[in-house]
Length: 50
Length: 403
Image (cartoon, each protein chain N blue to C red):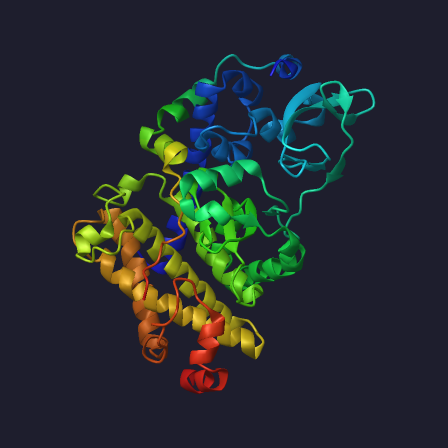
């Protein structure tokens, strides 16, 4: 990861998200993060068998 | 909600859902990889909807690290001097938006060095140079939808961790080239006959994976959001008819995942509740959320194939197959329309969606009764088999019945 430091510096990176980004993040529910991280529900059996 | 209102709802819900998913990735990156987040804090949603980013946070022990996933999203003048990358068991290093670096080094961590002066990449193992060739990303012509050429270990891992059915999953590398035009033609048919749905596919679909497996069905997952996986193992012809069906179906899962990110807006019970507990059909262990997904994709397949049968000139064999596929999914929809009618499942918002699916289904039943009366699919497996359909419903007889 250290090799990405040069990019880090060049990017004039911000230390934290903007206020607007923070607001958007706050609207996220734990449910959504859980769905992505652990949900992994594959829709490979989504229809009934006739 | 009429059909036009529904398409507008879908459009708005997809846009909002994609933003929420991108923000979820922003939040995860900020929380768990703040150094990387700093670099990309001003990036647009396209980066945060990169499918491998979802896979990275879904996988238990991601073999591909974030710098490798995100390098292609940096402007060239921002490329770092060195990036850690992973050569997979076949010696390939996959870099999203850049391509595959083909090497002879198997299953090994390597360093990708960028020389700003010569503007060239070199690959090294320790200090030893590793020769490589760059194989470019393959896109469906005229789109930004990638057709995955080779296995991507991180996608494989998420599949394997999600379902035992993926144990024999293998990307159908040798068949990719022959299906590019089929997929392009299927998308063109959708664009011509159902432009609103095609627009939603273009807005959400990032990657198509063709694969072989005796156990895993075609699928999509929020854990690899933006990816559809099409099983091309069986004896079906796998031309534009097959891909139209699958794009409407699996693409529908990606669209609906975005549109229903807030599942509680649509379901008044735990989304993971088995539908069988509510209907009394205990053998049906699909969750209510999966059944809602199923109802949407049944609606999408019915609409997509009906419009194409009406508007596209197909070869007689292709029209016969599409008719069989339409009748097959229409009969499955009959079951799910009844399932979701069970009281106490849907919120008012969910009910509004259901009524669109139900009305579309009733229109089909009224306008095309032969789909329900003249076809017996009791011998069909879970996935439609054209070989079996052609045997049980020969082409001439079907044409006569369809009038």
